[in-house]
Figure 1 (cartoon, rainbow, N blue to C red):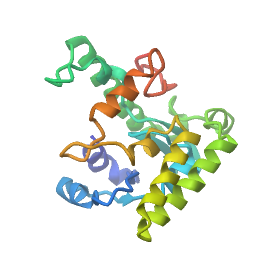
Figure 2: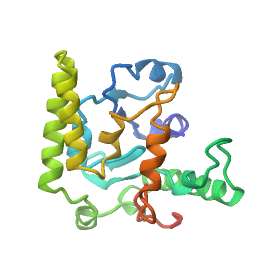
Figure 3: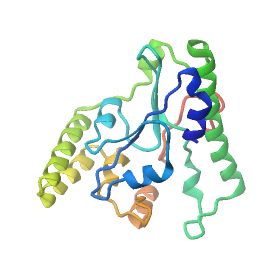
Figure 4: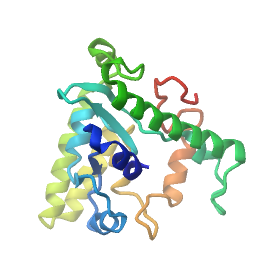
Length: 222
């Protein structure tokens, strides 16, 4: 999705900057190299980007214009809740759910294209006041969570893994809405994805609550 979008819009000044919020010893670099993206890809082991922009999950995105202004604060980037209705053995989805997922992705991509073409005149571009109103609220616990998360990462890099892991657990406890933090201690499959039983137990515990927050965008499925 992002490679195709970047290639089709780069001549108009559009740039994708992808950031992996990954702090595990197994470096995500081989997966990045295998994908062969032509846009910049970074690895943020201390989750500094998540701290700055209030990111709690992936994929999330921030739209920033050529003047450095945030046009759309952190939001789910074309992802949708449909995966929760997936058959966890066959990984198949009901046709209507698969269509809703595809529609969410297509709506988000079309909105980016409209913004690149029309700039501030795009219906998807927020003005300053609306953008500020959409900023995620940051609490004292969230701020402390990011601080102790970075402490945990430092200790792990210094060879004090058990101590560092305790601080990562504390960070996740302080900021339970952050799936990005929680994933750093979760079980992973052979592809490096946190999709083992501990992940699904946490998803199921959401009940009626959403995994991906609603995106305030015309045409986006509710």
